Length: 485
Image (cartoon, rainbow, N blue to C red):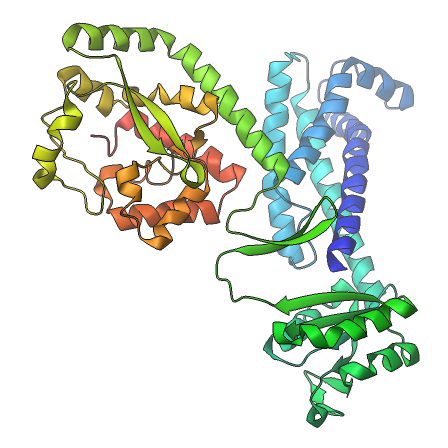
């Protein structure tokens, strides 16, 4: 219903925005020429005249900019979710988000010019294009939103709803519809199975009858959709009403109060013809997960190649300064309990695991995690590679294998997981990573329970932008050595 409308209008906005961004290029050309004319500014390269032939010649010389600039702006608008929730945003908020995104788009376009070495590109034209594109987009958004609101206010393109239910959730649903008149939804009346409510008003709308009356009501009134906002114990009552609506071609939607979930989000999917209602505590779109995986592979390969001299040096120093293997392999717990071998440069003596039991009383971490600030098992070279986080570099191979990601909760030991409380096990619902919020917030200076809450915060608020932010913060932490032991 509303989601379909939103998606359609979002696609319209996207198409119109792309046309406007391409239209901004020739308009910026003429504005730039006008500014130069009245200010006696130098003539820009490849600008032969202030007419169509001059524009075409200029565009032919900068065709890469003509094609690239609008696509960069449009792509960043999509990535920054400009087109989502536009109905519920205030125009002021939308204008601000557009402004921030446009600034980033201008920055990326500037890098685009540098990358393609457009030495003769006009800085004035670049600024004029940015200003023109932003102004046109803002004007377009204001005009379209104004038109939609006026259309819905006058009753055009409205969808008439019959609401089944008068409970708290049904009332909240009605208040939501009333507070957003620009959605184009109009509540005709309510239905309740309790005869005592018949004729009464709930949230300003009259109760028109009982569930058994729905077939009669949809034939007498103009009803586009019947929405059942009912508890799950009503399931056996509404089947007949849905069939009555089906007979006359009136659409129905069901919002069942199935479970009082606090974290998981529900979504309807289809499994080879079998409709499924899924409850997920972590949800991301496939294209987002695809980009995350592409970034994992690209960054890991780049890091391995870039640090290859350092890898060889570290391996050599570990080999000649202490007995034992160069790499330390340890079983860790990954996504939903999967086991895998974690790779690190060995920073401790070869029999470190057997010595652990004798040092347990020195543990400085709470919870099931074992950490000692001045661990006697660490070798001299081990201290250096731990302080500089060089010991973590082999984990890029774990990322390439797919056991880990660049950003995600740190992979725990099996012995640690066995002592988790139930709520802490949810951190295993996402692929583990080399870095996460805990890594950039002090690491060993943070208590175990707070560490777990940080990981859950990451899962609940995950986005590609958050991953990039944590990567940048990790770089600063590695440079300063903050929290490393």
